[in-house]
Image 1 (cartoon, rainbow, N blue to C red):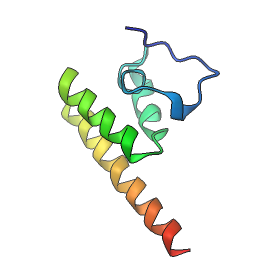
Image 2 (cartoon, rainbow, N blue to C red; image 1 turned 90 degrees about the horizontal axis):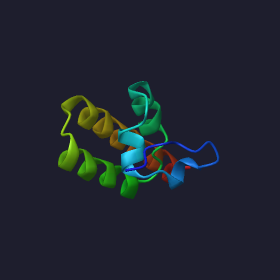
Image 3 (cartoon, rainbow, N blue to C red; image 1 turned 45 degrees about the horizontal axis):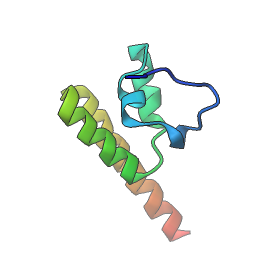
Image 4 (tube, rainbow, N blue to C red; image 1 turned 180 degrees about the vertical axis):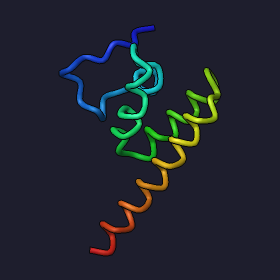
Length: 78
């Protein structure tokens, strides 16, 4: 599995394994912050449930889902 993060890769092009299994564990949180769509978020949750099932990571993904929903609501209110 290739987990390297190419600097030319746009955040939307990242795959769940790149976000959740970076070469440095300190990059997981910033990786989660790059998630911009619910589809990618769901893919990350599915990947995490299948491979690691780390509760702290699942909680961070849940928090990101809350942020995305809030952003979507704010945009639709404008």
